[in-house]
Length: 77
Image (cartoon, rainbow, N blue to C red):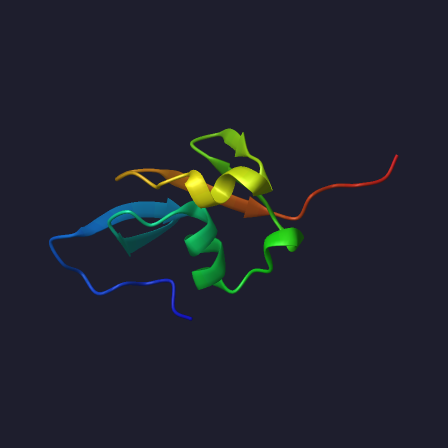
């Protein structure tokens, strides 16, 4: 699924890994992860520098100007 939405009055601008995207207003972090084609368990997420746990993504509505980062979690010791 394409991460870009058609530009419209109800679209919000966000940045994902430095790339500017227009998303539908009300888009959640979980929906963005799906649009980007990531398996939810394969990425960790942060919005505006703050970690967002996997179980909180569905309730985290993105806001205009949010900066989103998706990254592989580091495991091991």
